[in-house]
Image (cartoon, rainbow, N blue to C red):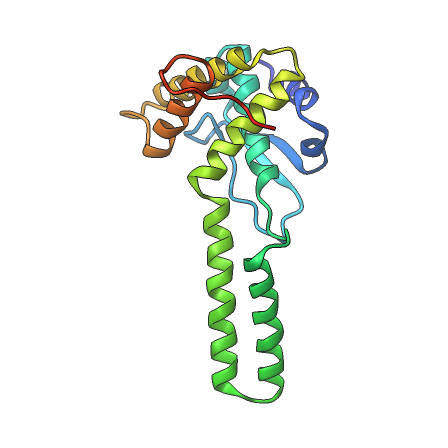
Length: 199
């Protein structure tokens, strides 16, 4: 597999929101098939690293869904969306600056603690199981616009998760992957639990 050709193909199937920030990078030395670091607020570029020596072992639909899922996860991380924790973070930073300018050590510590708690909460929300499941659903929604049916997309993503674990020679799936697989089986109609991608 020629990495440059595959990168161009993958870039073409990305949603427009992903093309503006996501960059696909060949990383043959990494043990994972596909990986991305958690995007921090000051990082404008969000690279996805792919080991193309391992990547080619997946089917084209599996590769498509894995990429769409990673793009969905990366673009779904929101540091600056208006909610209570972002508000607390902003208030904490402003209060800390005011207290610091007034040389109030206790005020600085309290404001700093408040800011740290709010930032930690934002971090955890963006790395939660819910955000992982939302990334899967986001990938399926984009796949619908790329010619896949909902059932096909869920099945391809499900088999891709299982195939990646084997390619990476892991003993099994982690807890989050097991939850994702259960959800994808429901969407694909492969379990008794009903599922479906909600807009």
